[in-house]
Amino acid sequence: MKKVLIIVVLLSLGVVSCDNETTLQEFYVEHQNDNQYLAFDIPASLLTGDNSALNAEQKATLETIKKVNILGFPLKEENKETYETEKERLTSILKADKYKQLMRYGGGNRKAELYYLGEEDAIDELIVFGSDDEKGFGIARVTGNDMDPEAMIRLLKSFEKGDLNVAGLPDLDGFLD
Image 1 (cartoon, rainbow, N blue to C red):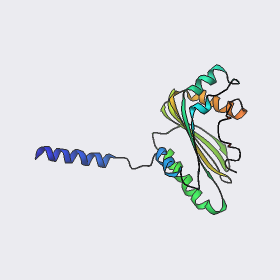
Image 2 (image 1 turned 90 degrees about the vertical axis):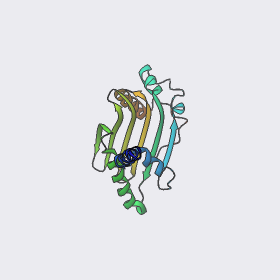
Image 3 (image 1 turned 120 degrees about the vertical axis):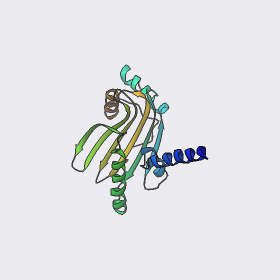
Image 4 (image 1 turned 90 degrees about the horizontal axis):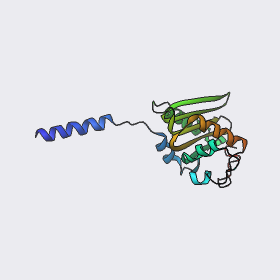
């Protein structure tokens, strides 16, 4: 009888201590097949093609990436209310203690925030959340092993300059237009 009571107490504690907060992964899975969202899963192999314009540090940084998941919500006249609700849900998820803010930039109706999971000098997941109250929002999850946050930011900047060969990726021009 004592053993049964101990097992019941331990199971009860386990159920009570479970975290009911939605994770970013759960949010992504929940919406990846939703027709209001655009979803892309990009394996690292598409990123590591011919990138001769990258320097050795950028190539090494690229090698730490496993995959990239992108989820976008294009804003339309008929989904403005849903846009606000979903944007607030994402903001709430990213406020959880496990997501650490790396940087924030933008102003007015446009903003972008970078978060990470892992250690400050060896992150396992980089999260880029951007929104534009006229076009929509998007979130990218970059997963990898022991990624250097400063090197990742430099790599993102090289992507903006067009140094990264992304020929194998879907055309993201106008992603939020």
